[in-house]
Image (cartoon, rainbow, N blue to C red; front, side, top):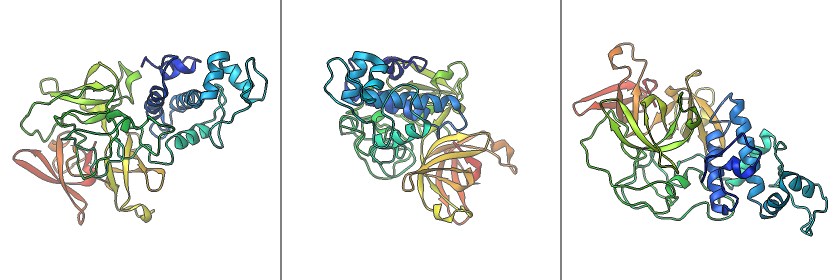
Length: 368
């Protein structure tokens, strides 16, 4: 796939796809861009809302064979005219509607609400954010230690109730509690765009995000266009205190500071006094809002987003997070450690900072 051009009016260029792209390529491009620019992942960003509308509208047209044919022959105006019932040269197809209850195509016509509706419809009512990797239960990120089966989950019509993140690692349902979002040293099948490589055995580093962890980029200044893109941690460079991250569907590898990475992990909601019905629900962290000091979390069972403080979010064992806000021992702030256990009674974690040091901290003192 090429580079998406969100300033273009051409649907193919917006999605970064050639004009002869097959259905699977178009779906993959839409999934990646829609997740990157989803308004709930980018709160208070008009740019994200606009881009989300653009990519949704482009895919809404190109994913429909009849609309795509009209667009290829006559462009955007041809799609609009045909939907309005006008006769087109070589016609005979008759009118055709958009997605159920939504927009029928044509740049500039899809509202934010319709874009959200189309996004939900495209994923067949499934959890578009949960699990990150498609139907895998358990821990915060999923550690892969064996071959991954399953073909492209976007090969058929719609998204089959799937997860847009699953295309990143090729789908294939996997169960179990497997923290860390790590890919083991075995080959991965059905995994377009990323190269599966054996990773060298290293001594356990409790303060380092593990190799193979799936992350999103955030807060980049010099390459702000990459913010929201996903990649895989290849290694940690101790001298520079940076991670080498290989981007999805790209040969590009970036040197990234820890604060510019977000791990999409599963969490459990705990101790919400105002909405006790949320307690015990599990969700997926979509983004961190530093101005509000809250996570935006998608709760699949409720099909909605909630904004929660770290103190109400329980990260699964095995997650590597950063110590913050410890007043009694301020020297600990800024250090990273592996969550070993959550003590429900006190709402605290046992955190391993090194091979010989385990400390107990409040849940709100560990953030991603």
